[in-house]
Length: 183
Image (cartoon, rainbow, N blue to C red):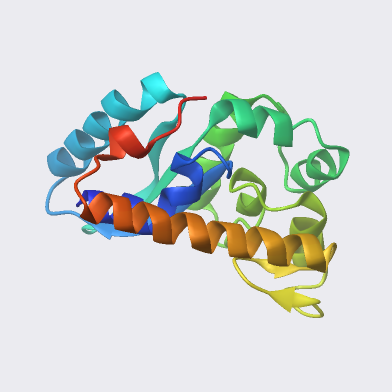
């Protein structure tokens, strides 16, 4: 695994403008995956971020990077709470919710679409996606939009610009640690 994956998939989260990001990666051994996540957390935890695998099996992992403080704010939203309750979440604190999300990724037969909340997508859009079975959206960008289309399009453009800037800075030699905004 390389820093390139973090830059390409997580720049808005590293910049502090997005709650969380996730990306797939491959690994050769469980030790390699564990070492990679430990090293990433050594760098990112002091900046207010956490990294963990949502699932991993047969050399493939789905990595989640998030800002616990930002996620705590998402979990205060009434629509987010309704979505999580419908999905069976009982304890709506950050750690128990993240643990339940990991369990749903590892043991559920269906994809846990509530993950959009953990990524910082607007709760109304996450609810709309689930209730409409991914149909009838107003537009599509980083997620399917069921609520405020104009706001979503501005956010999509912001994430795209952030990623472009971070990719350029990383290619010029900036490290993930230097590019990560503390928060």
